[in-house]
Image (cartoon, rainbow, N blue to C red):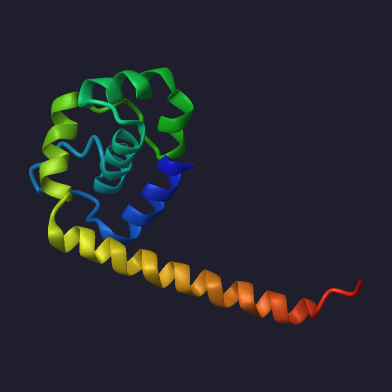
Length: 116
């Protein structure tokens, strides 16, 4: 669930490919989702690689055809975890949370008070 949520957020905020010279094996959102999973699971880069190799369904969920190398993840961290990118993600997260709250309130009003 963490991996999928991070991927959805990054899809809205991160460029598909960080460099025009990239081999395009992995997208920015895929790498960001992996980095979030790394933090969530408190793993090293090599530990994350092992975890992803043991969970092919997680990779398939975000469209990874193969598991990124630990060096790729390390380089992605340097590119993706920057103040501008993180601020944009926070803005998108807050806007999404506000929209969900509005929907929740509308649905609650439609249902009306519960009868006892």
